[in-house]
Image 1 (cartoon, rainbow, N blue to C red):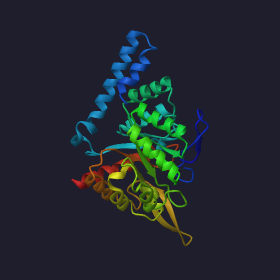
Image 2: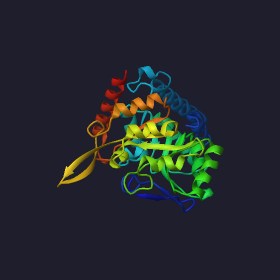
Image 3: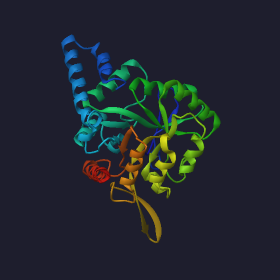
Image 4: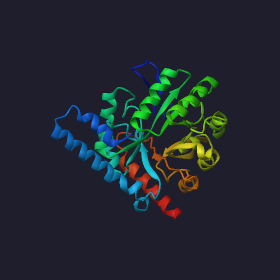
Length: 318
């Protein structure tokens, strides 16, 4: 994402950039909101939201064979919809036929107050969207800042935090303790050339001998920007893959110089079927998040073309 957001409660910085800048229960969220509503209205709201979420989640969770994405929890990194406010982005997500989100912090702000958590859960439940991952967040040796992020994740029912942690022993010693205590995974996000995590080996070196819940969010587009093979990244990182940003990039020659251009999935250099084949081999159960960086004001037709390519790749595996 192209900017950095300051956490207003602590004054600490969580990194949100993508290119150059970087429910626990759905019913539970509505139940908290219930306290401020008249009994009849609250009951209706809770029933409607819970029913909607349960019904819409069924094709990809309970009945994967009926989903065009087979067993994959196909979702979206909400940064792809950054040109819209959260309710509109959620609506567009449903229009695209998706039910899983990795939230960009401007859509779901990080906060731990009960009223804030209840509001975010109710919004997601009403839309029938399951929030499974969150980020990208920066981490250092500041335990108070880390605890706020992990508290938020646990209260929201988030499985993994996409992260850009400092590459030092103090930070990773802290993360070892946090993932063990909270049972929420840290997924190190590679961000391409000149970033902390550029090559596959950058991630491998930092997760080696660390807690099993410290691993990777494989951003396929950024690995292509780094002249790395995303299929090899998934294979090498194996069971430490806790997140995937499915993104395409094409190498082109402009003025005699090699350039990398973000593309619609299926129109670049990404081996989509190869990535999915590796994820299937790993029995990967977490969200596969489509991410598209172009055309932020009007991305829907491009996103549908991305998803069409992904569906074709899934079909080719069977």
